[in-house]
Image (cartoon, rainbow, N blue to C red; front, side, top):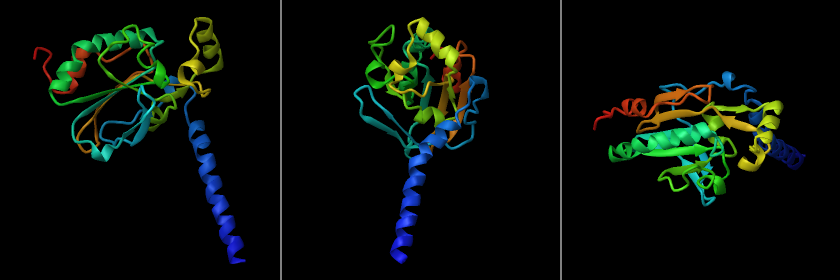
Length: 212
């Protein structure tokens, strides 16, 4: 009898782990306006994403020893994202020189991270959050509705082909500054994907003068 009880408990635990990801995915808002981004002062979550080579990249908030900027964007297919990444070319070297690590998280699958950009030779650390692991953890993920998915396809944008998933989820573009120790010190996000943090404002948030 004891063996049967133990077996039953084991099956329940396994079943619980099996349904957990689906339950979490169901919590993703249906509209960009309904996301609830992680606020300033909160502890940054740990997450695992992929490099352009497809290798795992694990972000351990407790192990952060240098200020880190996380820049979430929709993908190389998004013209507003391309323009923002190009604009940031003027400030990323300054941030790195001041000891900042700068990580860009895209909804594209690994092999598309660079070649989908207008400037594929851009000197950035691009990471694939195609599974929306990081975006969900930071409260930025939302589900694109069916009419929009269809309309995107008519314009040659296939979200499933870009991400490799059929979840139809995207992040609200955002910038997070994570301080040493893993605390959120600054954040910017806007459900209107056309609105992005200006380069000078990013420098200001990092405590760097635009004239430096």
